[in-house]
Image: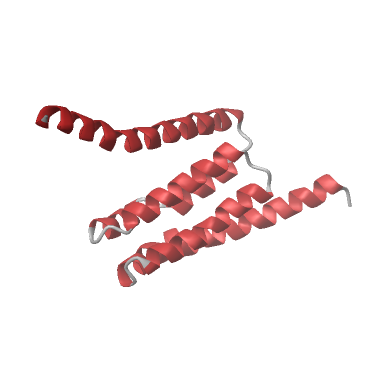
Length: 146
């Protein structure tokens, strides 16, 4: 059997497994229920399970930018999902695994790859803004106070 055909079979098997994870966690509502029943721990379990889709992306050769975007979805889901009450509502609405599966299935689309790079650059810029904002606030306060 040619190597390309073996790779295609492996890719389709990994995608089917990822689809099962999504059905269980997002469509079966296990992710938000775990977060509701086990505050903090349930969200951590959801992130660990969601990392399987990132593993699949890596295994099928998806771009680093796409993998980073998938990790951002998981991070957002985990961070906001950990907030009491609001996070539980957020978990029911924001389905990181479903979003990541959609990204995974479109991973070979050139337009998606360009968009992923732009999202990654935007996310890095946002992190820098988030880090700089407290410093600027402190400097403004000190100037005002003294």
